[in-house]
Image (cartoon, rainbow, N blue to C red; front, side, top):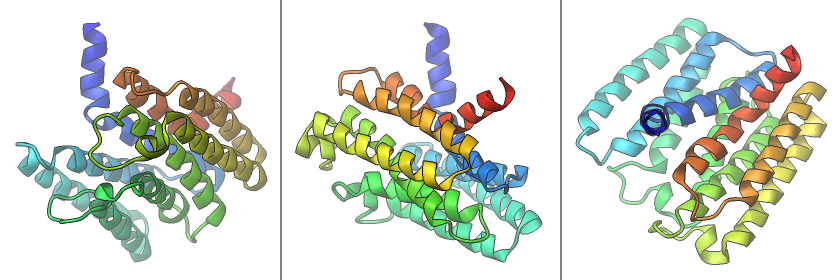
Length: 251
């Protein structure tokens, strides 16, 4: 039990896990588009990690440390882009960072997280832009839609988890848990259908298998489950396409 607590504190609560899951989701599409590069992977992980740390700790006593860490992360990311890519990639990255700040920042009177029902779509938007725009020479609409619908669906179970503590109106509060699950099912289904039409077969199959697991985890989502079910189980769904791809390739 102590090991599980340590693991949760050092890996999940530290925002390392969600950052890794988001990075692996991007790697899946990078591999499919043949644009995989380690500097880009590092760029995405650092961006996710610093962004989630900022969101979580901006109102705590660790705020100054987080600001310094984010400043260093920004310099590292800029170096990675300038050294390995071009000024267009730098502009794309900057826009995505600004969108992240608009999601939840202490210096804004109204930010996206305060707007009822918008949060789930906004998270899907930012993650989708990383996959379809930041890592590619041109905006890829199919990858945007696949990513957007899938990630939006994954955010809904977290709203189910937090429905008794959220201060902003969310889908589970307004339409109930079961109807929220129906929306999530529909989004995952649309994403899986799009993947069949637009991704190469091995990638479409890996994504389809990930969608099956995602359906199951959404089905068992309720506001009485332990936080680990969401922060580990549901969070892992974004990495499943890449993990299934590895399994298919090597086993």
